[in-house]
Length: 204
Length: 204
Image 1: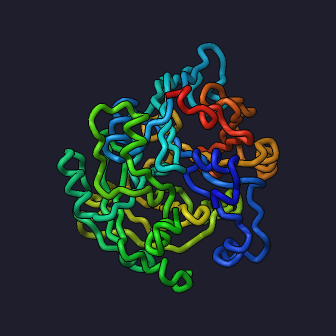
Image 2: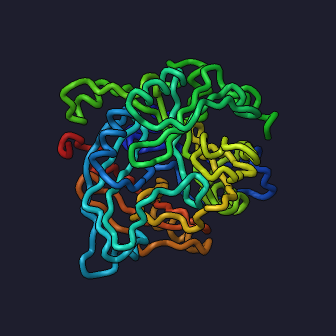
C-alpha cells in the first residue's frame, strides 16, 4: 500500500497510528447498515493518540526502555497567560499549561503524543477501566509468559495471571499491567491467530 | 512488510493498531541512549486501544457513521458476581460489570475495543486533556475545512478555529472536537507533509 500511494503518502504514514479503510463495502457488509454510511469526508486514518502523564521523563523511560518506542521530538509550550485560548481550543482551564510534549513513533506508522500538564483543576488519579474515559493500550507479544516474567523483573505491577479468551478471541491469552504512573496496559498473544481471524462470518 | 512476514503476520496485523519498530538502531540513534535499550522481549506492536463509554450503541453510531470504522464483533459479559476476578485482572471494583464490548477495525490494521461498564464507584465525567489520564484520538483528514464543516453539520462540538502548527509540525493545521459523550478527538491535516518529515535531524 505504501508503494502505491507514493512519496507523500509515505510522509503521512510515518505519522500514522492506524489506517482507516474506505468505509464503503466493509461497513456495508459488517455494520448491517441499510443506507450508505457517509463518514467525515476525507478521513483516512488515525494520526496519533495523545495521553497526559504526570512526569514526561518517567513516561519517556517507560515508552522507550520498556515498550521500545522511538522518541521523535519535543513540542510546546502550550499556554495562554492572559486569554482563553487553552479553554477554547483544548477544553482545559484557561490557565492550564503544557510546558512541553513528546512525540514517539511506534514502528514506521505510529505516533504517541505525550503531554505533561499543570492546571488549577487537574485530576491526578487516572481513570479506572470502569470509568467513562477509562482506557488501556494493548501490546502484542510473541510469548506472553516470557514478557510477563520480564515485566515482573522490572518491578511493574501485573494484574493477576493470564486469561485464555473465548469466542471470537479463542486462541488469545492476555494480562493487564500498569505503567509506573498507572496507565492501564495489556499484553496479548495469539501465536496461532484468533478464532475471528479464521472465520469472521461466524461472529458477525 | 505484510508480504515478507507471511500469513501468520497478516492475521496479527489485521488486529494491529500500530506496529512497533525493532527498537535497536532507531532507538540508539534518536533516543540518545548510551547502552542498548532492551524493551519487553517479543513486543512487536500495539494490538488495540480500549476505551470505556457511557452507551455502546451511541458509541457505535459515532465510530461507524461519523468516523467510518468497521464494526467487527461483540464480546462479554465480563463479571464475577461473587469473587474478586474483576479487581484482580482488570483493576476495577469487584462488582463492576461490563455486559458487552464491541471491537472495531480502523482500516486493515486497527482495532478499537469499546467497553460499557456498570460499577458502584464509576466516574461519569471523562478526564479533561489536562488531567492525568486525559487523552485524545487524532484523525487525519485530507481537507481540514471540509471536515470541520461536516462535523458542524452533524451538530458535533468543534473547539474553536483551526490552529497552524510550528516547529516540527510546521505544515499542519489541527482542531479538537468532541464525540457526543465527550471523548476528545482531533482532526489534523498536513497535505504537503510536516517540517519533521522533510528534515528529521533538524528536530533531534
